[in-house]
Length: 257
Image 1: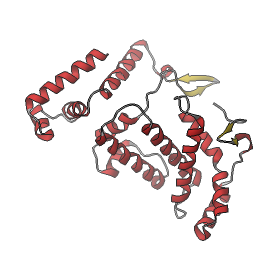
Image 2: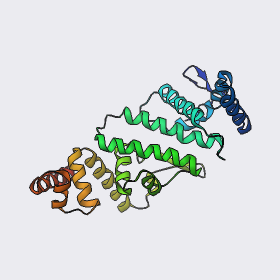
Image 3: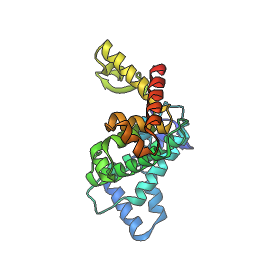
Image 4: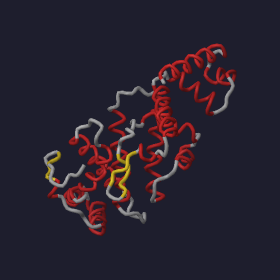
C-alpha cells in the first residue's frame, strides 16, 4: 500500500520530506546539548516518512492506520530519546527496529489470543534484547544471539516469540519477481510441501489453543527430551497427571487438524 497522497492522523503524507543523515545528527547533538524542543520537533517531523515506510509491514491486519501511525511515532520518539551519538550507527538504522518493536508490542497487546504470563514475559525480554543487539551490532541479531543475551535456551525463546506472533496468510506478498508479486505460497515448491506447510500451521494453531500447563509439558517432553518423571518433578505434579495431560493435549491437537 502506498501513502503518497493520503491524510493519516491529520498529516498529508505527500508533504512529508526526507531529512539527510547529517542533519539528523546535528539536531540530535543540539537536543542533547540544549534540550531544544524546536530541534526535537524538527527531527521527529523529518522522520515521519520513515514511520510510514515501516508501518506498511503491519497493515492488512484489521488495525486502524491512524493507530499504527501514532504507535510508530511513539517508537520514533523512543529512538530520539535513546540514540547514542557515540555509536557509529545511522539514526535511521536504529529507528527502524525501534518503530517496528513498538508496533509489534501494540499488535501483541491488542491480540485476542491468550498467552501465558511466563511466555509473554520471556517474549518481552527477547524483544528488548533484540532491540539492544540491533543497536550494538548494527544488524538484526539471530535467535541464538538473543537467547545468549538473556541467558535462556534457544528453543524457549523461539516458542515465546512464536506465541505472540501474528498469523500470516499464505497469500501475503513476500517479494516481487520481475514485476510479479510473489506470495508465501509461491515460495513452497510442490503440492506435498504445501500440504506439509498447512499441517504445520494447523499444528501451531492447535498448540496455541492449549492451556499454559499443557504447552509447558509438551515443550519439556518433546523439545527438551525430558521424561514424564522429570517433568513431574519440575512442575510439581504427579507422573500420572503429566501422562494424562500429555495424552489429552496430543488428542486435542490431532482432533483440531
